[in-house]
Image (cartoon, rainbow, N blue to C red):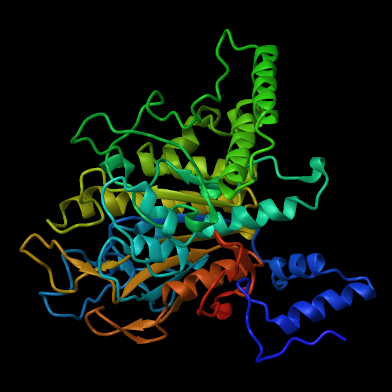
Length: 482
């Protein structure tokens, strides 16, 4: 008998010596440690309600008082410049600038009490990952800092799908990226590289497949105007086969890459090398896939449907997001960014809020829900729409500009069994703080993962190979589902 003296100790991978010995011993009964670790990494089984997620991210922070938490009885210095209108949801008054959403509120649930203490735009990490932002040097286009971040929810899905494919036959494996980000990486249109959208310490190979739509000039805002097809080129660079790029030439290029890799096989298989191989393999699949080229060609949609979504960048990106889901994506983020430095971050006044932001959201979100319902996609897709914060109850100036306010703000959820026509949580008389049922980013993430059938105990492996649970804290809001 082998005895290890001393108190039980945890090893670097999180297991105790006793657990390692027990696991190894079970190999005599037909179960190896490798099998045990693989089963543990797969996480606990949760019955999924959704195949996919559409995450509509309104970066900058829409005002709760100008959207889904109107306070008509508040003082004149709080309630805002717009009037409330009735919706199809009992007790829910919606801003007059959202009439189409008011007419279909029986299709979605409103969470009025999202809340967290991080009252700045770095909260985009918290909202997209379900974890507070870790310490790191931050700044414009600081990509290196993002390698220390928690992985985005979409990257977690891509990671789990990748490892699930490892046990499948090639013909059963996924042929489309799980995580897609539209129409550009968060902040890039403004010259920044925001946190929370990447795979972080999971490794760059699990970053999203992101398209890159730019603006015409420094002062241009493509979310506030109609866009022409020439600039709405969602196709990934290199996907369109050029006239002199024949199939044989592409195959020869792949062969050269394979020969190059063969010469490097004696290198230590470090994490960075493995990530490079995954990234290169995905690039080859993209270049040679007719399915990919077709999926990213928005011109295949009818003019009438494109008009219905709105020809502005958010509308066309949401339509493209629906195409991504149909092609096989599992987590699609559609971003409304701040090309002008303000947009939803409406410090200066309510002019853009009433003229562009609210009407654009009303048009696109209502069209998306109706279109997905008509196609049968809404039953299997969880749609989530929110910003990283709300706005101050008290305006900053006479033009109804409002500052940052993360203490109470709304989110909209629909599809995948979400009970439409309900509200969750109540704010105080000024929509400043929750009075009941506060919802943290951890709770929102747990709800999203729950819908996808991913238990909080599901393990990922960090840069040192240590198993890390998908979530720390946060219980799914199961009462939202029918």
